Image (cartoon, rainbow, N blue to C red; front, side, top):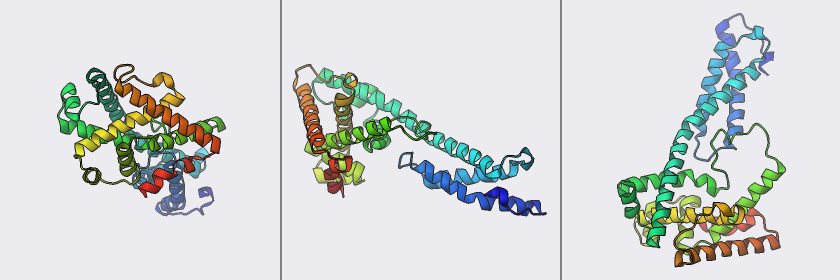
Length: 290
């Protein structure tokens, strides 16, 4: 504990001792934070922010206030790390806004055309180039990787709770993970390959496109289509009111979606009957991705 550091007559030495003796605290807070944020967040960036805050805390610390330095520094370090996360999350918020625009446009066109629109059609409807839509969908897909690992779409502030999740929240989280694994398994084969290879095996889009004999743009479209299906499949089981209709009621596209939702529900019922855990339910996709 830093309050037991031997005093030094040299202020510079005392200052350095205060910092070096408390550096492990930065590592502890960073490790604690990394367990609660998306995998794309850089550990090095958080560590750098934490160490900078530690140095600033040592400069500003006033022992006469009676607050132990470690407690004071921990508050400054956590604040700096949260600021760093917020600076990352601004992109996530803009990505989510673009995701809503793309989704609304794609849903509207699907309903009007009776089929999934092409990237060019979506681009034309939004007044964008095909390249801009593809780039936006790449950003959206990266932002949704967290969802594919069973987390929420909440902001990073909400992903760093001050209290442990309740048993009810843990059970709900577990159920969502199981449904997600089952929904991936029930995707049409080519969409399932795209999801498994892109998100779990982390293969480049160009490699997946070459394997399936399609263009990179088509892979981007398939990935977006799969994410919409996965979202709606989970909602169909957990929040039916959130499922948005696609195409004409009773039409071919609508029937395919309903058949897919029914398959996910049937697989989940079988998993529940057999008492499968989320790891067992998702073993197929992870094994294939590996």
